[in-house]
Image (cartoon, rainbow, N blue to C red; front, side):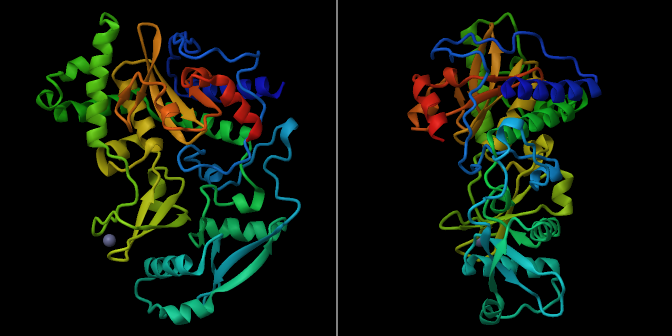
Length: 421
Ligand SMILES: [Zn+2]
């Protein structure tokens, strides 16, 4: 079936990736499920075939560092699911906002936005692109904004918007900027996107990078501020009891959460954190692409009215040692890199219901670790949040495993939601 083909495809990507960089494959047992809190998923396939039609969520959509993928230019269709990512058939007309700067050929666009937010984006972008020019007042700008209906199935129209995104002239309201052109990402697209992201992480987190991370961590680790736990105690030791190991991991996750608070939308100019407005997504600048940002979120400050950029970097060293600004997307991968460097066997966990975290293997058992929550071994945490769980996957260098049953007390309900979605 297609599920098996997809699994093999994912595996091939990972094997290619690890071979290319001569990394040792992880030790065996990555598909093991030592925990027995939830019932096993029935059926021979590692995941169900239900498609998820809902739009890409804030945290857990593919956040590829490959600009082609991030821009939605590369789409993977499976034989069984050719309709999943194609343009909507019934209503190909979509409303866009357009501003044509006087005397310039290139226009600026917005998908699915209102005039007020597009206006704020225009003021910000025009000033960024040419600081010396005089920007017209709001009334003049507003009068120049056109509302157009575009036919999203027209290849020329698609080309125009893809070029606008590349040039930094498009404000999109969805994480996949071209969702209005081709519809929501299919199950296949999302799984492939996360697999690719894991592959890129593995390829880039080389032994040299791990060594740099440890050299950076060592001098700033303070036993006094961390329950007396020494830096050397952070490394994986097979001789520890389960409870000893978990106690050290709790201290480590506590440190992580203090060092790396969850970023919401704080203004980077004045620090204001109240009533700021999300304007949309834009493509990263050349400098931001250097650290493999796939997209940038813009926030308008309600106090000083400046626009703050939040580039979604995929470079763990940049996030850990410099920006210290992220959400569970950045932090799950950053924690993965640190735990890998400390000698743990790890998995990267992606919840389709908008969250990401990590696991480490202790005494043959996969242990849940959430760097955003400083949570250790609390797998039913998300159920208690009221998350509508559907699919939860564990990614390693060797495979992708459905671990939904480890994180819910009612796996049947999760499987039923797969059909509804
Ligand atoms: Zn501000």
